[in-house]
Image 1 (cartoon, rainbow, N blue to C red):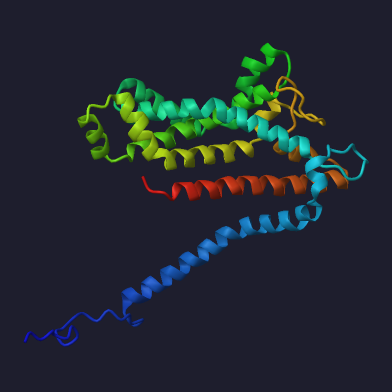
Image 2 (image 1 turned 90 degrees about the horizontal axis):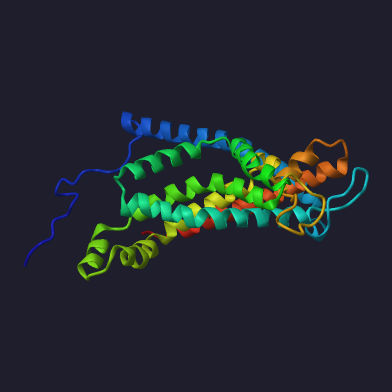
Amino acid sequence: MTMIANPVAAGAPDLSRDLGDRRALTNLILTWLLWGLAILASAPLFSVLYMLITRGGARLGLALFTELPPAGLEPGGGFGNAIVGTGVMVALAALLSVPFGILGGVLLGVIAPHSRVADATRFIAKVLTGFPSILAGVFVYAWLVLAMGTYSAIAGGVALAVLMLPTVMLTAEQAVRMVPRRMKDAAYGMGCTQTQVVLKVVLPTARPGILTGVMLAVAGAAGNSAPLLFTALFSNYWIGSPREPTASLAILIYNFSGMPFPNQIELAWAASLVLVIIILIFNVLSRLVGSSKV
């Protein structure tokens, strides 16, 4: 009968941690130091969230989402038009940037990843990720606003699309590159064309990564104010046409925070809280979607 040896008796290593050991003590000190730095770094974030909740949460109510911004000394009011305007311009930006961003990601990651066109496109996209957002507004102002003769939601959507495009493109490239090579080779071996491989294999497999990039780009666009100053400007009324000046949450916060009226300042805090919640929702959705592995 075969006897099973006792691992302790057989001389197995003792894995218990002794704080008297120099390496164990160093690991403990560095771990606590890292936790301390993390807490210190998150203190400004939690302080801002605390101020938003305490000062902006006091004004939360149905009126904020259904009423228009008040005049100087007028009480009450809301920013329903700014929420709608933000949604319209972000939707226009996504409509313009997402298809081209995904096509660009497929070009960079699958079709011609090592061509000169791909290298130049990749370089330009990386440069645009650090592009000052206000310059995108100035560019669209000179190119579109002056041609149309008016500020508009269309111009605001185009400016936001300029900022969203490189994020969508680069994340789409990384997502399609993560598709296992054997899956594409198997499709080619079955006689599929490159178009069929991209549509039937690459894009469905890379969908979680692509959607993550899209949601992050949308969240960033929703909180941008600088490009909208030159393109959509602002309006105290509900949007009637995408060809007219349009309100947005970011510009409303910018305008109301500098006013001497307490009611407008309270609305600015409430709008800041709503905007942070919207951005937080998109970031959480991007994490949930991106948790699916390619």
